Each structure stands twice: as C-alpha cells, then as structure tokens.
Image 1: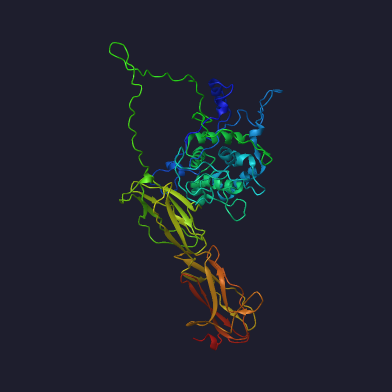
Image 2: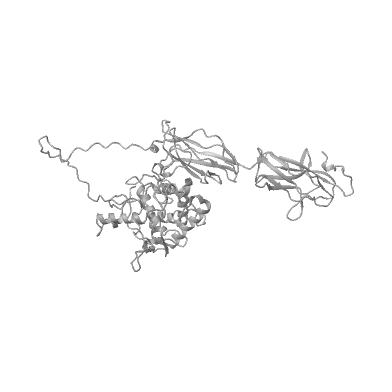
Amino acid sequence: MAAHFGRRLSKGAATTAVAAVAVAALSASQAPGAAGDEHGRPASAGSSSPAPDAALGGDATGNSPYYTDLPPLKSPNPSPSSTAGEPVVRGEAEAGIPATVLDAYKKAEAELRSSKPGCNLPWQLLAAIGKVESGQARGGRVDADGTTIGRILGPQLDGNGFALIKDTDHGEYDGNSQYDQAIGPMQFIPSTWAWAGRDGNDDGKADPNNVYDAALAAGHYLCRNDWDMSTQAGLHSAILSYNNSQDYLNLVLNWLQYYRKGTHSVPDGTGRVPGHRSDDGTPRTHTPAPSDPPRTDTKPDPKPDTKPHQPGGGSQTPDPQPPKPPVPPKQPTPSETVDHLEDAGTAKLTAMAGDAFDQRISTRAETKAGMAVAKVRVRFTITGDTDATFAGGENVATVVTDAKGVAVAPALQAGEKTGDFKITTAVVGHQVTNVGYTATVTERAADTLTRTGDTALTCTPGAEFAEKVQVQATYKGAAAGRVAATATLIKAADDATENDKGPYFKDADGKAVRTLTGLKTDAKGLLTLPALYADDTTGTFLLQLTTPGGGTVTVELKVAAADASASPSPSPSATS
C-alpha cells in the first residue's frame, strides 16, 4: 500500500518548496550507514530455499496501514560540530521510547544474538518498525507484563482499499470472524502470527498483544531466510518482507537511522503517538528514501489541451459527457487460480535422531482442471511434538512454485525427539485444499560394537575388576554418538537371560545389579561402563552389550582364586 507524508509537510505555513527543502535535509542528515548499492531481491520462482513473503505481495502485516510521520530533521543528540551557544533541536519527545517497550526490543535483540548470531539484528530496527506500526504500542500503553491496555487492531482486510484476507483465526485474536485484522504492537496478521508467534516473556504463551512476545516474533521473522541485517541487501529484504512497499522501506530506514543516533527511556504511557497514517486521506506521495536527492520540479505539470482542433484552426467543444471506456474484468492472481495442492512425488520421510532427512517434500499447485500453477507461494509448517526443523532452524518455510507448479521445501533436520510429526502446506493468501505429510524420527542406532582394549578381564572373588569395559559404537562405518545401549551379565552365549550370580555392577545404593539400561555413547561413539565387581563364585562369565540398529558385543570375564591355576574351570553358570 502506498504511503503518505504526514500533514506536517503539507499543512500550515509549510509551502511545497519548504517541504522539499525539509525532505532534502532529512535525506542528507539520516542516510543509512549500510554499505552497498544492491537492493534485496526476493527469491526467484522455483527456488528450493525459503522465499521472502514479499516475493509476490504478501507480508507480516497484510499491507495494513501504518504511521507515516517522519522523524525530526535534527539528530536526537547534538552534533559535535555545533557552534558553542547555538540552540540544538534534540527531538527528545520523538527519541523517547517507553521503558517496557524499549526493554522488549533489547531483550529480543539479545535472544537473536544468541540463537541467530549471523542475523546481526539491531534493536533499533525493531524500534523503527514498532514506531511505524503502532507508535511504540500507542505511546507505551502497556501493563507491568508488557501486554497492551486494549487490543491494537488494524482495519479489517476486506479488499475495500486494503488486501482481501478472509478470517483465518475464527476471531481469536482480532475478534473478527469474517476478515483478518492486523493485531498487536507489531501488527501481525493472524495467519502470520500462527507460525511466527513467540513467547518472549516466558509465561508459556505467545500473545501478539504483548510487546515482549511481539518484539521477539518480529525479530525471528526478520531474521529468517539467513538474512543479515548488517548488509543492505539483507536489511532491505527483511523490511520489505514485513510490508512490501518501497515507501514503507524508506520510512523504516529513516527511523532506524534516527534511533541509531541516540534515544532514551520514558515512562510507560508517556510516549508520543504519531498523528498521520497511510490511510488517513492525505495526498498519496512518495516517501523519500534517506539517500533520495531532493526534488526541484515543484511546478505542477502543464495540463494537456483537451479540445480537439479543427483543420481550420478552430476547436470543437468536447462532448460534456464522453462515453466511458469499458472496464476490463479483473484478472485473477496466480494464487487465486489454485484449486488444490498435490504431492509431487515425495518419498517416505524418515531420519535418525540428529540426522538430516535424505528426502525433501515436493508439492505441486494445480487448478481445478489439474493444470500446474507457477509463481505461487506455498507455505510449509512443521507441527506436532517435535524438535525437528527445516534447514536454518525454522519450523516454517515459504517457497515459490517453479514453471511446473512445484515447490520443494528446504531439507528437514531431525532433532532428538523420536516419533512422528506433521508438515502442513498452504497457499499464502488463498484458501485451497491442501496436502499434508508425515515424517518419522527414529532413535539413534549403531550396527557395530567393538571392545576398544584386548587386556584380559580377570578378578578374584569378592574384589573389583581392575579394568573397566569400554566399547566403540559405529553406524555404517562412522562413529555413532549418543546411541542408547544396554549392558547385561548373561547366563551363556546362547542364553541371554540375566545371570543370577557372578560379576555385577552396583546401583546408587550399592546393591548388586546385572543389567544396566539408559547408557549412551559419547559424541565419538565411545561408552565406558561403570566398575564391575565379583561375588564369591569363580568361573568364566559373559557380559553382553547391545544397541538399537543391531550392534552387539560379548565380553568374557574371569573370576579365579589367587592361588588357582591360570586356566580355571568354567563355572556351571557360564557353561553353554
């Protein structure tokens, strides 16, 4: 949606020329510091990596209206080169951010610095977006927990001057069961919040009306797709994905640079709320980018001569009511032509815990007649009790269909939780019949176990074995780390029943146990067992270790009296 200048550049004593000078001064004093000339571009159709939601017009806010007030022309801090005694406009009211809101931005930055260090998200970017979207939660009208006092709602997105987004949350967040509305201090639409929402204040829920939750969600939203905010391309792509408008991008960049030059905390509820919005009826103009040159062509364009000329030099009076040309019918967007999503040959999705899935999900967008639809954004969402993610650590990815109508999701990465989980699909901005997928994470496995040493394991009755048993687990020739294992003192090679006499381990209370469960190999696939002890039974005994995946090794243990011969007779318990 096109943005507007606030009336402060077009009303009162300001003339058009003065407004142009003001814009020029703003451009010169607040140019962003990001290097490079390349603007961020959305991923191309057919990309197998997540595409920005701005790729085909969608975004976090559904292109909802936003505040268009520009920051003051002067920096919030005095310039070091200011002449002594010269009055300085600090812009204190605009530079002040309500205390709780400011704290939420900084906490979100700290979390992203840890979870996604490559994003380099500055809290000032969240502050710039928060200023433009809600005037910093309406001047910081929040309670002690950071929840806004009353819901902040954008207009209903019914297609009447705005995007058309029918209800997706049954009115849960916006109270509207017919159409969606942007919600909260960062103005997420419900369908975006459903997958982007975060719990930023650790209260066990993700609330779009809480500044901590909304700020953290905005940070993760901006940092998806491996965008780096320290580069111009990454910064611009991220902002455009929030609201796909060049005017919006320029406005946010101006506020970002303004806040980078200095800001301070003000009490909650005392912040300044902007006065102009992009839907307030003010003339639609282009918001200048911080690096745009000022316009000098302030004279209105000459009106064309609408009177038809006769050959003799005279003119005819035009028809006072010329017939209106027919209005061509509105052409549907590619997304609107999609009837359903179909699987495009996805193989069985199975991976061991901690591994990447070998197969990727392929989904095709089709019309009702079964024709493929290109350039459609398909959203893949991981659901269920799982810690599996897409490559990059996200549980949501948006991919544009290629010329054959196929969208290939990013590779899945299994976590440590085993079992089944779901991947749902959806066409962004259009409700269609979708296709779902089931993926399975199996426990870590080892197909081979070998003892690392070859020293004979011997002991006298009632004593402790001098050497501990250590084994190496491998899977397909590679070290198998964090694999579960079981160790059992068995009766015989052909009888894996637990022995009731002979060597034993000790539990936490010092009692004898002959089976250990819950063992795990380390990152290198090594497992060292606890100490073994001998009772008063002599003979040769067997210790068997097993792992999921078929790994098995049997270790021989000998218990003999100190004065016995080197080869004592096997005890009945160890005879096969």
